[in-house]
Length: 380
Image (tube, rainbow, N blue to C red; front, side, top):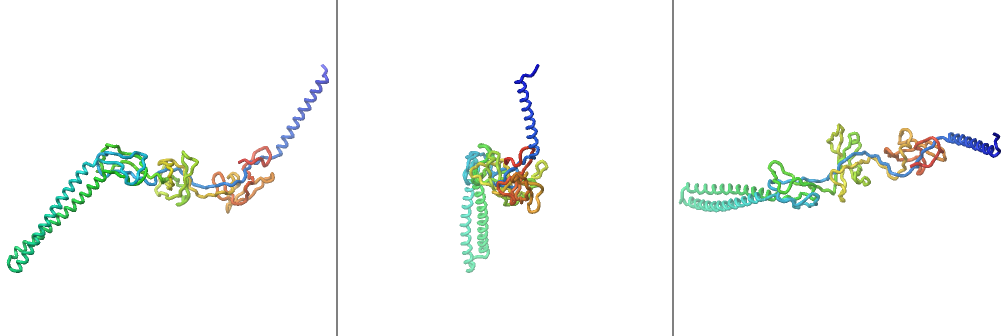
């Protein structure tokens, strides 16, 4: 069947369109192939870089004390509970004082009896001395015998010896009385320091036996200053120095930093799963009581730090660092890439400080990919 003119026109137009599309696709692909790879860049910015040793630690009070009792007896009354704040000298607990009151009263009565005997012995001594004086006067007048004089002198010496013995007994009785009075005082357990009651290990009505070991009633801790005990691996402990800056975060407040300075590295290591750790200690203030004992801490000991410095990603650095911290980077300027030598300062695993060789805002190359035009939009 012969083609109609209208149909023929449509066929020719469709052919021309398909040819044009094929030619455009070939030309566009060729241009893109010649354009070269895309350069992924980031601008040089100001920021902070820090090199540090990391460790896991535990938080504990700087000062704490286990409060026990020095006497045995029934725990009659406990005046505090965990969480209470106490001052030094506050009454914490009472032990039944009946036995100790009886001992003190008995000691006092015994002391009074000994002091009465001492007064009697002193009176007898005075009489013996008077008799000795008479015998001495009579002996001078040859009115008495030497035997009676010697007997009077002996009575004086015996009286003095008995007084000395009584004075020794009285001293012993006073010592016993003082000890029992102290024991009576120990039935009232008071706070040896100001702080917070952390725990109670005894119960009201419990009988305590202090003959072999002082029983612990409760624990008091000062929570206003906390110690961080960080476990540092043997590979990193040699990098630490006393007085260096340290900080940590907690699981509950990862955005907050508590800062301090390294106070001590304990010489005795701890071995955990055949890995050797050394405990490094430093203190922080805890006036708002946000830190509690046995909290976990992510600890950082600052080896070096640069603040408000020119910073680039570590991936922008090329090759190895040379003398004086020199290294190279690729900089995208005017659509072309140039290699530039820079001086690198503090560097961590992510960023590096640029001491010289770059300006704020310049674009450094961090990677390349196929397609696109050089010098695309910076990627931060």
